[in-house]
Length: 155
Image 1 (tube, one colour):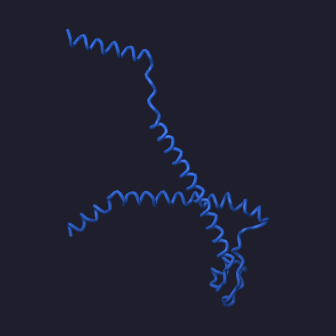
Image 2 (cartoon, one colour):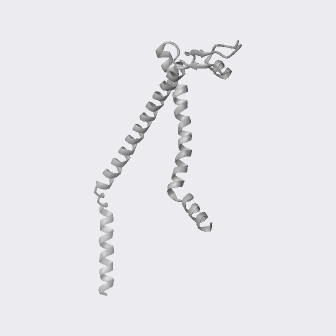
């Protein structure tokens, strides 16, 4: 049993597991940012361009109405009441949101990759540049230092 617990501890604190935990946490926060960007910034613009609403949630066909239902005929209310719905509009809305989310993530990853390439290029360029020659006074002081060392060795 001790060996099993030791093996589990080693697994849990291994670098890959910790990296995965950090990635999941960052991914959750990133997901909220992307979701807000789509919902609060992109979708209002899409709605204006389409001249109305890109929300098709309330487009559905009632396949079976609950007995004695007298509530509102909205997707949310009918779904809560237990109606059987062919909710094609909700599917279209979710599909549009997915496409927009995927596009936003694609653009963000593309921007990140371009920034990384630029940074790597700057590092490579800086590494390839020859070191600038020291100023004349530094060279002169080095010669004096070397001459003094040489005199001390001889004398």
